[in-house]
Length: 201
Image 1 (cartoon, helix red, strand yellow):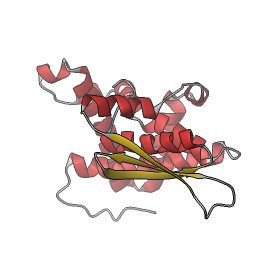
Image 2 (spheres, rainbow, N blue to C red; image 1 turned 180 degrees about the horizontal axis):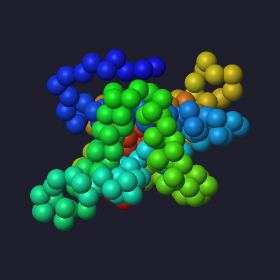
Image 3 (cartoon, rainbow, N blue to C red; image 1 turned 180 degrees about the vertical axis):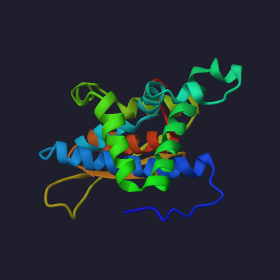
């Protein structure tokens, strides 16, 4: 997959969108090959630990992106704002590399300059992250009504829970898993990504 090299009217938000998609694809490929015996739940959680907002911000700092971004002094004093800006800038950079040099160069940058140089996979594996706790804390702050719809999926060969996360009477995400708690966690992981919630909310 290579870029066309023809692009006009770009802004950072469009580059962030593109970079986020490239990042997800490369990280998924890395994890799929590195952990051949792990299931989808493990791979999804590991991907989230790599591409979450805190991690992306930390990588932006280590790459020196934060230092070269022009920001007003009052924004630099806001830690959460700087974290968001840093993570967005890194995604935009990945998108720009893809457009300028193609998928292979963008993949090399992610594999060798980000994950290979700055991330410790073993440490990430041993870091417990509860997306449900993060999401429920957000819901409490926002005064959202959270409900869970839980049914056994009759089409599965073994009994599996089909769990739907419902926010203010609106279904958000549905996951099917042998474990009801794991299905709820996967729903909340998707919700955290949708809302761009950090691990330190």
